[in-house]
Length: 114
Image 1 (spheres, helix red, strand yellow):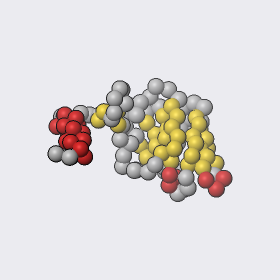
Image 2: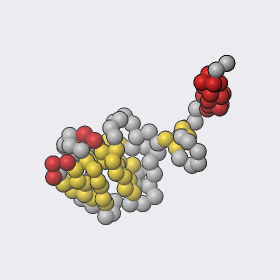
Image 3: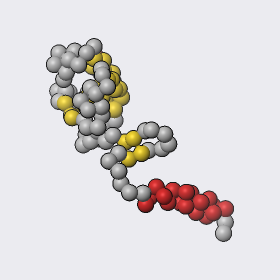
Image 4: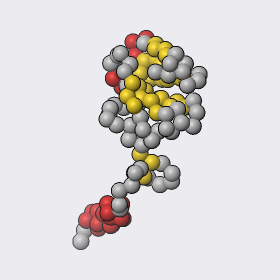
């Protein structure tokens, strides 16, 4: 058995428990306490996230994507931004008043939490 085959076999055996593990409500990715939260179905790259409390948060990204959660990230709703531009940053002062900025000098503001 050559070295490359041996390395591949060891890697597959090391990952085997992860392949047969039962599905959970949150998939653990890597080590520690990080869990995939699945802000689907949008599928766009996200560039910034901000929480104003333990439960309320927003994420922004490519193609005008704005996502909002009110349950600490367990579920995300897609908010209509009215643009297809890249949104790079988001900042909320409280649960209602927020700003988002993006490409081509775009600046957006909400007074109702988006």
